[in-house]
Length: 319
Image 1 (cartoon, rainbow, N blue to C red):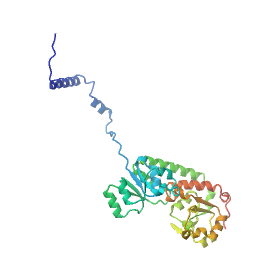
Image 2 (cartoon, rainbow, N blue to C red; image 1 turned 180 degrees about the vertical axis):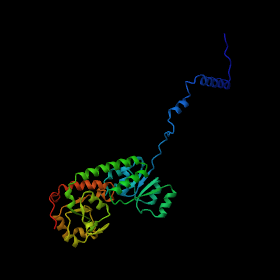
Image 3 (cartoon, one colour; image 1 turned 90 degrees about the horizontal axis):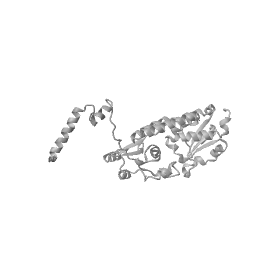
Image 4 (tube, one colour; image 1 turned 30 degrees about the horizontal axis):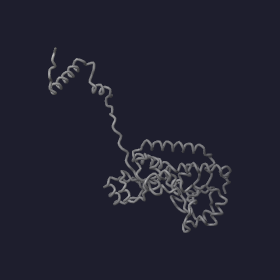
């Protein structure tokens, strides 16, 4: 009877290693596992890397809120502005109420400690920007769009900043499809209609504004631009009486206005014009005033209401 030979632990390890080495020399047809993996990877191929965590973000005004809530993953959002939670101003009040609110104060940004803070253009002074940068907070100001192309570019820029390029590309593709569908269904006769955007204080929008771009998208004439107004301006009531539009586009007439700023909107002569000239009212809580992708919502709303206006089908002859 054979008796087992006692082996120390070190001797056992050396014996096993010698067997492994011997097997690898005598069995070239069975390469090591590491060699099999290496041979399966194509030359110059990039090995997969772990996805980087998305940056945390807060938004500090309604326009930034609307864009952030469109693009961001929910877990990215640390806070939205108080405006976003106000149903009188915001079309996303219910969704926004799920997040803490802020008043765009520097102290709040320091409290939330986001990676990125979305602000409106010109929000931060150099001192604020330097203070927040020292805490690792990047300020990303939203540009002020002048038209649909600017809105698409802003969407792309912010999506890239917050690590949501795919979501941004999807929003842009959807917006472009809606614009195409909108323009294809508009009759050519809209180009004959003079349209005037008007606020209760007599304010209007001429050329180089998103209102001008909105009217152009719908094939409508911007009366303010034709009267020489560039940018944001006012229209004198006397001129309005002498050269009225075919259609009024009313903004913020559905909001209670202080008497000092709404005298124009309460004037009896304007009421006479509104009684005989068709008007389309844009809801104040639709977010269209930000000039972002909500402009497409506004364009679709105007297009639907145009169909119900008699003058749209039977324009008055030019005087």
